[in-house]
Length: 334
Length: 267
Image (cartoon, rainbow over all chains, first blue to last red; front, top):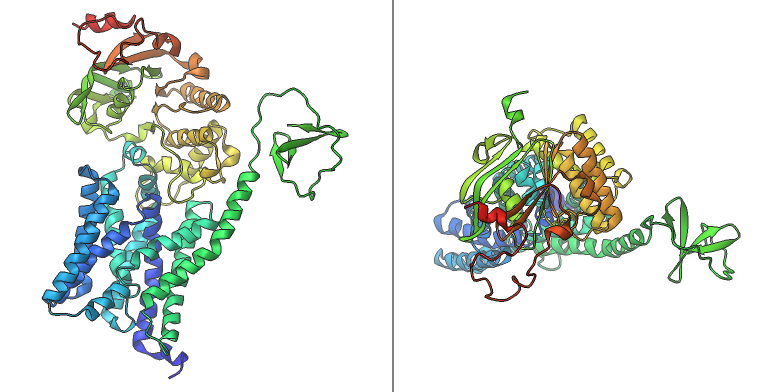
């Protein structure tokens, strides 16, 4: 069987659709989570969902649905601990992290299932996706996208400044819960392709990649979804291609591809930020005593290589720690 | 005009606020009249920020009532009439955003759910940016601006909601003089449009001519409420070291400031 024949297989087609949906949903909610500075929230919920999967294996119900229910409960619990308890956010996350993973592994053991069964959920698996799974994944993705896009002004206000949002009349607690629940839903969406332990990467890494190049929230949002789609579909195809030689789970391939995209954009981002810092116009302040640069042989111009920074109605040339402004035949020190 | 429009924008009636069981504000009476600009002065820990947080409903009151535009706070739902500039919050989050996006988020109080941005939203954002003098920086990333400019962005965000009452918690902290001047200009324009302003400040600087009334807080009490004072006069004490001595607070009725007669008169 050749590489191209793979795409004619039913499970591969289902996996591709699931990956595409995951790549859209996870970064969409991830952008708001990163904006709230809760990048590890997804990890906490993902670990809690392990217990949900194990409960499904134990009771014989669909692990997807038990995972959705337990992940949502975990997300709500995390919000409550954060808001009510005196524990801060990351300790609340850590508590659920450990509880979820330990509970999941324990219950899987009680259910009489081996680690191999759980592994499909922890790191993703291509051939475990049924058509019902694809259908539910699509429904959940639509829910996540409609809510994040439709409520983005409200979610943006809550995620950037809670006090301000509350005084503006928003039900901040409700929106915080909504963000947590949507994160839980998109984690279960991504469970089959990326796996629970790595799903958070698909919420955070595309956002981190996209914000290297973007300056606005909207571009970051759209860019993150684009990166997410490319990484998850690309990673899936790559892992399928590699599976002819070695056993590769799709989850790690998807995450590493996303990280590779981050690594590629990071130096560009560093350069862009540094450049925009250098080119920020100098503030106009009251005139300092007139000083001219003594015997400056060099002639500044648009292509002289020195940064030309706007300063009021003229341009300063930044030069060995000096700011030279052209003034007739000579340069003034500004 | 309905009767609620005639009611004073903000009234605190015998308000006490406790944080973690410890009383922070004690029996504060304050009425802010329509169109007034009131500054709250006082040393650190005197309860200025607690007062504005109780006023905006961010902190529950232990006793007394807060009324906004004549409605008790628990029944108040016209939050689009209130603008708030929180203390020392940065305009930047974990994700980059442009100045326009941050200012546009000030419209949330007036937006209906699941509706696109209206022309009125865009106009309000553009005019708020003009008022604070950042019209030309609308597309810049917020993180590229200086601290003072970011503070102006936060004020523009509050102005974009077209508030009738604007509450600012230390907007001048750590802001250089040109930015303070820009801030004062923005507040003057808002005041001329008839809005009421409550300002917590450490430095008044260029805002002095705008102020109608000064309230000085001390140790959770209102120590002075009257014509404008400068920061220097308000922070003047005869015994400047009184509060610095550990355990030095013996609860005896010292005269610790020229304004203490207000407290004793209260009975």
